[in-house]
Image (cartoon, rainbow, N blue to C red; front, side):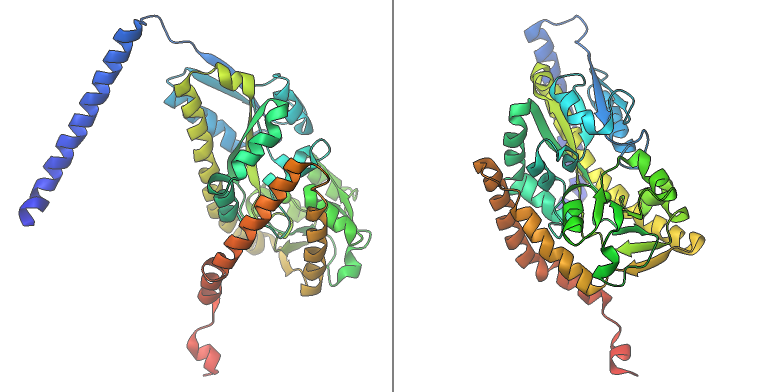
Length: 379
Ligand code: CA
């Protein structure tokens, strides 16, 4: 056994050398087989986003993704990223990529609600799945296949390109003590959450990120949800609203989407397709990691340095919102069989993963939060 352990480093070295050599061999073989000695074709793509240019995490992730793709492809796939409004407006990204104005887009599928209401369930469903659960459904539970089927008639290929994790409930300029306080409340809240708010008497407003701060400052809206502490701190929302509510029932794990024009995708050689898909999948993980770390830091800053007042939504408010969420989601099916299949698949996966997470994630988080034994005993 000891001899084996001593030999292990040299065995590993031999293996690595062998792999490197065989990789070199394949390279040479491919070059000689195809006889290519002219420079490889370079693809110049545009990626348009629904986010303000360089918005932390949401805006910077596609920039980093483009950098990685450039590096991995040795410059053969060169993607230039545009913020919202630079080439097209935030809500025009879907159509612009569909018609090929840009080869790629980055946003959230609930921004296409007016065109394709069911698309919202691929971003986030109120009281629905968390980031971890959405990733399970999308990549191992049939979700991504359904998403592709839904976007196929538009000539678009969707991919999951990040997740915010559980968002915050939002910024309010008055306290929410009961359901009554939501009546007539004008709140920036996109997607399905907005419809749920309307059903309990609120007035949802959909605004792109760039207009959120000014609208709250000037009283066009009374409240806004945006993302979480990291993005909300950057926007300075704490300067125009006093109360910061949790949890973000409206977006418990919003998937960021990348959409690729299907013709542009088909024009890429196989290796560039693989590089692109892998870079998007990496971004999917990377964005969640960044949000997890930076949200925790930013929350500390908001509370400690800016005196933000954290408030939990009262249980009866959450009960009403949960009840209405189920009605709104059920209403999405309409009479389209594909839409019904999407909802069925998501509902079945949610039920299954929820039963599992009740005794794992949820039970663990509860256990971790339990007070020490001395406190429980009152000693
Ligand atoms: Ca949000």
